[in-house]
Image 1 (cartoon, rainbow, N blue to C red):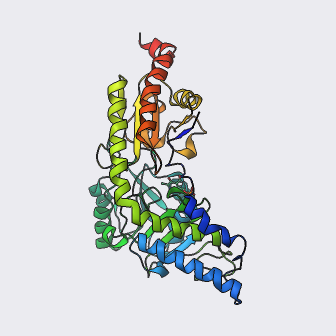
Image 2: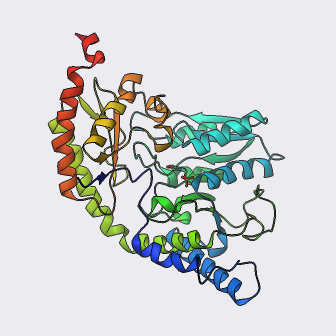
Image 3: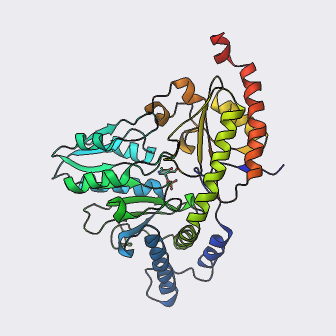
Length: 388
Ligand code: PLP
């Protein structure tokens, strides 16, 4: 049976054309970009070309893009880098209660080192209220970090509005745009952001490479010390094939985004309507419109997300509960709890994230299989028996 992959928020397959561009950088063009001979200069040239493509995708200048090992490193770099570089100015950071663990745990780390962090609430659709950001600002606030779109339920946050508030108050503004770069328009000037985290493997590039956009003039300290690569901001020999792949994927994303958004939004609507019509007691998590074009997250009463997931897997359908990083734990998603869902409903959540090669037939197959699974699981559900 051909497998159906509906977990593109966890990772995307590397685009075959991206892989093709990467391959020579493992073999013929293997030089160290810091070497001054021709091998090195070829590799350096390839990195700079990729930097231009990534910068173009987010409306940035080339020298404002620093390559990292992924989104997690970019988030850590932004939060810790700004905090430690600006501690003479203040000790307060504002973030939201639905951030990815990479932001959450970086914030918790700096809290243990004397910083204060405000975790803003979200409404039932997962939206941060810009007014709450404004109210949380003190004269000690040095950084605001709010994600562009949430990886679990896909809600797109009012980043441009928060950006205006941050700018007016003269506070650095970081956004984790790992789920949006390459999928919906991200323009650093329109959004008013100073730092943006990105990750190649979420946009059909390879794993283990990402970038942090750093607006010129932003004060942050590097935490990788060594050979002073990336203009002294991130030491370590560059992941040349990975960076080339990221650049190539960024180019594809820029060319195909509009068309993909229309196609995915249609498929998303088909899946949401189908689930709501074919299964009783199911609710959509996240905002109905302000959501990523490829994200469907639902809670289904009286069934465990994990049981649905395993049963779907037996039918060759790969989906997710919560985020990829927390699906190995049985803890409820902090995101769904922050939106006010009960533990029961948070545990009954399922996330389908569609991608470039998702077809209508695949969605129809989910709509054929999942209602049957739900009926079967409900028949043996202790959650339902306790209600009777
Ligand atoms: N931020 C968000 C919103 C994510 O969804 C992810 C990955 O799931 C990350 C950060 C971490 O990115 P990476 O896997 O490149 O470290």
